[in-house]
Image (cartoon, one colour):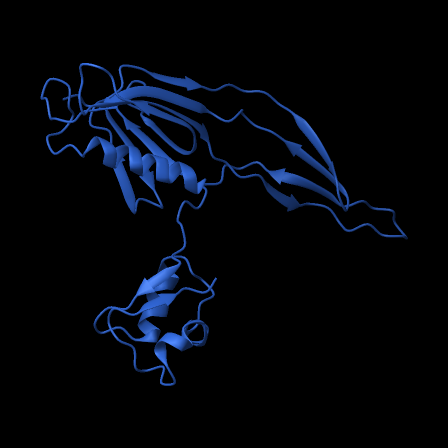
Length: 232
């Protein structure tokens, strides 16, 4: 076992995968340049771009059986579970977080990434093992911030908007679409719990109206096991 660990985390860490076999190498493409982009829509916009989006790729395999000579931990997941998980994350088009510890002189890597490439296959002589190549690109927002006054017929002042070039950590959490009622739940408790999970504008009345056909006329009578839709 090495001091280096490769992790993918999805939905703000609600789902994780630690790679059982570290790749022999990791490719990181990055650099710096400056580009000015002018957008013409209700005024002038100037967007300075910082460094290009970092691209990271590596190859390894998911072993069927544990082998202490190359596996990083004993309780390795099934190869098909690993490929299914990564493929599902890729299909959502939501960011994952790549964390590599002990890389680059101990500094490690920690990036929000989009999965752009995921190929996997089996090889003769290694029944049950699944080999793969994974390619990712950095996930980053551009935030526009107004810095000038609105245009005026008297003064002729233009509205100038520039990019807020401070790095912004993207929200990687996926908002829940349904909620299964648990013992002791009330609509108020459910709303509080869902708000902590990112459903900011939810109210008891909104939740009730969206699930009136399931709950019935009395909003205080909810039963464990009922599945509620979470209104956006």
